[in-house]
Length: 160
Image (tube, rainbow, N blue to C red; front, side, top):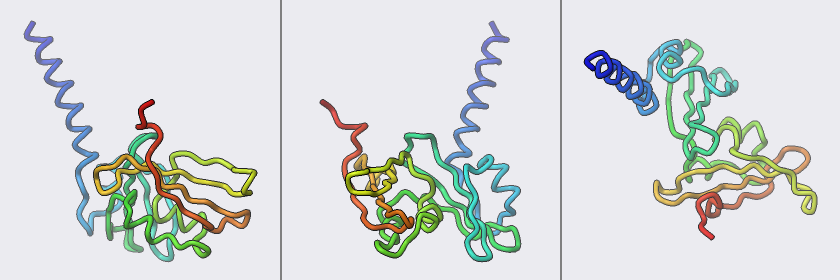
């Protein structure tokens, strides 16, 4: 009985310590190796001038994604949750490219092509204002330029 209890407590501790790393924010100046050790391997990496961006998504249906900006010295400049109204607001219609969008808010939850309007659309789940289950749709033309954005309710959370 005591062995089972010890095993259960050990498993609980390991599980909670893994969850804790999701909510631990690394401090500016932290070496990239420590950031990766804390957060795990990033889902994607982008070059942005002389800095690198590391992206972590929290599951395929998650409403949160995190981006770490790493300086040329290999140290963390910033770490932030990027699926926010403010970050979507920095995407410029008729100017931003697919690469700009990836570097701003990371990979989409879903993507599709809409032949009737000849646009590719990327969909992002996010928690608008920390309250509403929302989707942001970003539409691209054939050259990969943002031509339209729409915000709406996340259909996954709508009840029949």
